[in-house]
Amino acid sequence: MEMVVEVDMNKCTLCGAYDKPVCISYCPTTAISQRDKEIVVTEFLCEDCNECGFRCPDKAIKIKELTF
Image 1 (cartoon, rainbow, N blue to C red):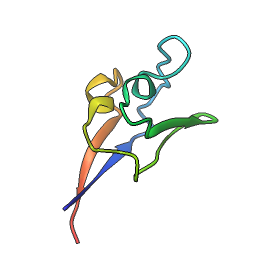
Image 2 (cartoon, one colour):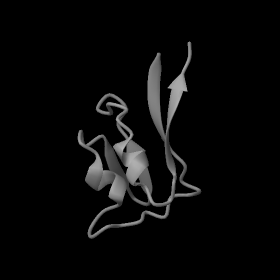
Image 3 (cartoon, rainbow, N blue to C red):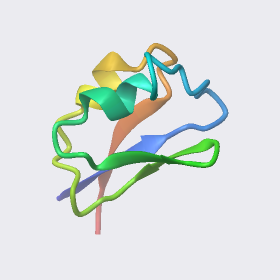
Image 4 (cartoon, rainbow, N blue to C red):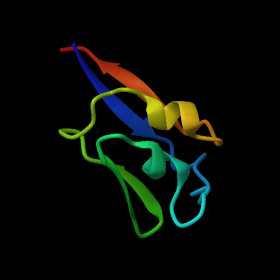
């Protein structure tokens, strides 16, 4: 079983606490970054802790379970 963080850019407002969105600030593994006006998740760095999802004020981030 593999997990994947999914960011719904239709909900995301790039909330910006100080200089960057909250999800980037709270990611313990620096798996989340911002490119232009989009949030990007580097999957091999992500530990699926969902800290970003808990902190997202827009509820734009969720963990999806992949099945093979």
